[in-house]
Image (tube, rainbow, N blue to C red; front, side, top):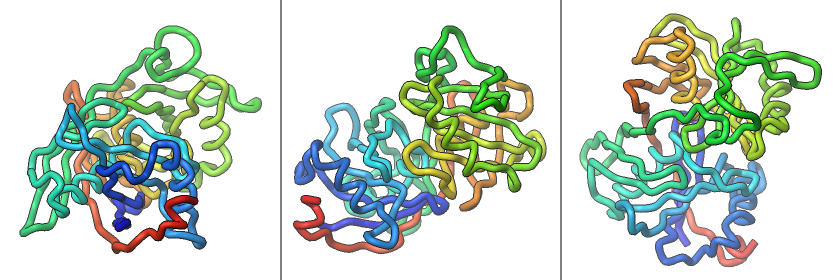
Length: 280
């Protein structure tokens, strides 16, 4: 079975064409854990499976490095679109992709047979706690969250997957590795959560570090960038068009009722999975 190793701003994935269902759903989680283990395997933040869809041009399934299945991933879906276009699975510059967060529409910028950038309609953020999900009723906008005796001002929302956004003064020196996992696994989030630590530079620019649910800190997170821009708009900190500086590079986010994400996708290499790896 062939695979591509890909990344969007350093947020990296193993991508496999699984339209023939060679990888059963029951085996996907263990395969993701096996393939994503760095130094001992391919190494990645997640596994993306290409599957057939009756609702869109193609279906994307996402498995995090810990084997948990994610609803949506902004960097992953750009890699996914490039893979599908360049492998003639969906040879379209306007593409629809079915995800656990619904059907997403994408626009591909192509040079020759190569996809350079992808723009994704990410949908509208859900603010109700029940839709994030988060315990309690109503919304959580700039509210206090207590974590092991510490207090944080958080804004929580969903883009098909849960996000907890915290605005800080200096993100470079912020203890993301310490605070991130505590909030990810906080009892307020029954399905755990992604955690964004954001520093506003001006109304059209911010720096962002993301602790991703099931992965740890990653070099970039597309849904995290969108969630942060939405939160910044709600709190009056940002305008509708924002450049988000992540550890792996920059993403462009626009918020006009729906969120739109634009950024690159890169192929690193391709290889083959042997039968003993697939059954691991």
